[in-house]
Image (tube, rainbow over all chains, first blue to last red; front, side):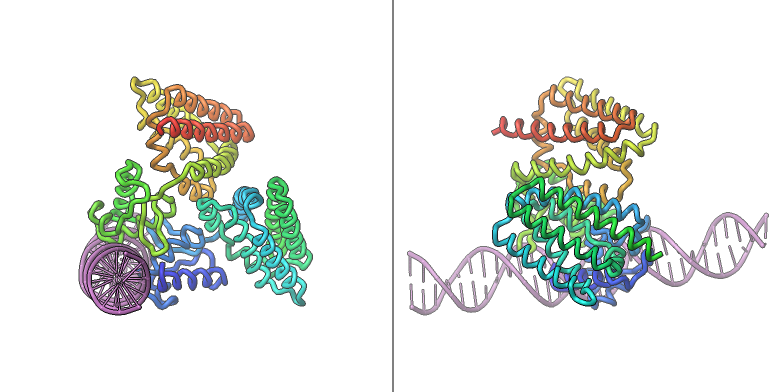
Length: 215
Length: 215
DNA sequence: CTGCGCCCTATTGTATACAATTTGCCCACG
DNA sequence: CGTGGGCAAATTGTATACAATAGGGCGCAG
């Protein structure tokens, strides 16, 4: 996908992640073409990708809607991520170069810094968090695993809810990363998997609690 | 995807699974349009789907090639299936209706029958096997899980190699299914997961042995 | 007033022409 | 003989017009 198609993908994704469209709302290819400034052809490409990531869904007659995930759906998403990223962490423990581990440490220090700001810079936190996890997924050196994990992308509701996380929650998350780095330095597959597992499972509960509190 | 797009997908997939194109071979959209009898537009849709299933890959300049999987790649595929289908089996154990379990038994009896023919009907075996696993995936009632699993589809080389499986290997596979059905009837999640795990891991070794023998 | 069917409109699907990019070749030049 | 530049051909990307299909509303009959 070159310029137009890639641009459409990026713009629509941002549009969805920012929460500009309500879950369940219908979108049309024409609308999206107008928003992105390209024709329907590349928009259709972008929509296919976003469908695969399940940010968009189609009804029985191919119309396009903004995905609407229940709490159970999100639970299931974290469970799948736990399995797959746990596996990725195991493989990464065998494969990460020292430089890559240093890079993880560097990213995580930025993440700590974002938390320590007043107020905490949650957007920065989420960005660095994504990079951190991507480095691990990449190091797992499994094309299928990577492809599958890109589909289990953060949902708008999760990103939105993250803005109300407590500083303590964010700090704990960064500490998890520290421990993950320690596991990698020790080349301990099982440790890495276990930390990743509890990291993601706690993340789910943090989300669920914040989500309930918001109601 | 309606007629043309769906038709293109089906024909190209069959084309690949039958092994009509060699791994690593380049294909062009025009060629595929000619083969499928539709224009490039729906072909491009179909190619996107087959890319997601990793039956096709693109090089750095977007040209299309038949995927070529190493033994390690296939090992990794079975490992991912083991995790995900193991999880699916757990969920299915809680959710399968009695009728669905009966249907599994019915499908598996056809599978036994296909094995008992002389010579064994391997194509029929593989078809019924796929249906069997799909029923379980469906019963897991997790859209993401289902979507992810459809990507971990059988590779041409696996289907091709299956033709040289011994009758005993095929029988063992059908027996695994019998045990899985027993686990479902007992509503025993752990049992179901364990059987699914060993079933798929053995399937990998059966493949790997047959594959080596062929060399 | 209600239910059914038809038609018009909204929306997605397909074909095709053209644009952009990439590849590979050929030839000039060192 | 090798190497690099540039041109032509092959291939993918985009726009647009038209086709097919689904949905919603309106009128008519009961």
